[in-house]
Length: 216
Image 1 (cartoon, rainbow, N blue to C red):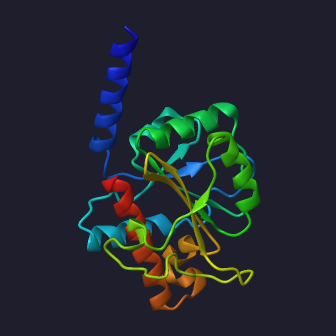
Image 2: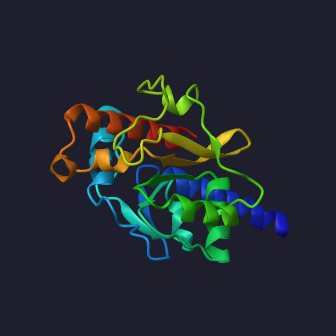
């Protein structure tokens, strides 16, 4: 009986991921942080991917809560913000099950969330730590090449950009982009007045992340 339930669950997850493979979501979390930051970012990244990677992602991303079973509908979930993040035990368990079942979580620090995030990720992965993703990783050498690794989009504290990740059985399941501000580069041009070359760099890196999530 137990084995049949596991088989059904695996079938359900497989069917769900691949039937919804062209829809992505923004993660809504508790703690007071602005999970809704960069409202135009994902929309622009989706448009870029659909134009350049031949994806057919729905143009408007969904919003999904950390503790909801609905997260299993999306192969890619994006999380951002500037401030506090809090995961309950149940939410941490749900998020861990999501990525270990085949989902991919991209967290982009919009400046200020890093100390809170690290604390909460210890609940999600009590036996794993964030580790730097080397510049030779596939995610930097996919459709677009980034030989120096994660690009710097916005400057804050004169720190180098870091791509930090969690791996499971050789697969990158969580990517935390820190001191880069990719999401700011995805926003409408009028928001930050970034040069087109900077926005293009951010969008290309984002496209690599989406492509990796969809392939793995």
